[in-house]
Amino acid sequence: MNHPANHQLTFEQESLLDTHVQEVKDFLALGGVNVPFFIAGGSVFSIMQGLKDYDDLDVYFYKDSDLKKVKKAFKGSTDFVSPNAISFHAGGTEECVEEIFSVEQDVSSLFASKSSDSKLKYEGSTKLQFITKNTGQVEDILVGFDFNCSRCAYTSLGQLLLHSSFSDVIRYNSIRFCRDTLTRYHKYIEKKNAVDEGSEVLNFLYSSLITNIWDKYEYYYNDGDDYGYHILSSEIAKLNKDGNFEPIQEIHDDIIRQHPERCIELFMGMIGLLYADVPRQSPELTVARHLHNDGLIEEFSVPDGSIPKSLHYTHHDVQVAAEVYPEHFI
Image 1 (cartoon, helix red, strand yellow):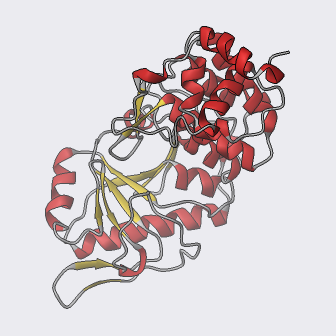
Image 2 (cartoon, one colour; image 1 turned 60 degrees about the horizontal axis):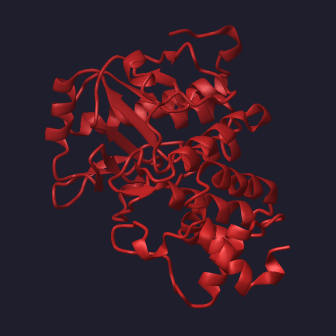
């Protein structure tokens, strides 16, 4: 852990973090709980960047015994429960969502009360998420975070702690690629001002996904999983919408290089690619598009997300397609 001089907090940043700590303390006190904790991850990083664009406050506890006290005190009072956290919406709203919360910009005050049905009700302006999947010392928790720029914490004693790998130059530190790793990457780059020099990390994530394109990936926070080619399909749809076509071309080319015997099959499973602008379209993608457009397959989706055996197209199919669609094979 360290607190480098170039990461000294401004008065405004420290005041905002102290406000959040007090929010958590006041809410815990409503349940008769007084235990140490720390706020970690994206919210702390955003504040250090001078931003307020964060989704929630991720609150961690040092001991299992302290977490048990929290669970007991707030049993039946949570707004949302996941395998990894118990959560409380801002303003005591009844809204329930699957994603991990949108942000309320104003964090000026906290009001906590008991509702008429005796449910402990959080009415603060910033959504709280008490992490239940693990407890421990700050360093032990931070080292498990996937991106180094999220490895920062602010304790209930008002101390900023940074992992030795912390930086606003983003690095990927996990061997556990998740369904939403790319989504989290874009959040840190586009909303939290993290820096990816030469798109090094993004290219690494693309390459890893393509290499292991048939694998299933679990979500970072929530239940569920998805195949690598579906994740890439969604990424390509985003790139295409943004008019960022060159990475689409590179993903397309790399899939052909790494999976030459099954690339048509993969393309058929990537609806985002079938409808994307690919500057230099391969014969394999042409075949996949014709198969799709000819109605041989209306939508590439089966219950378990796998690819039907009937769609195991190979280079032989490219040769056959060249006779049917000669204008595409020059």
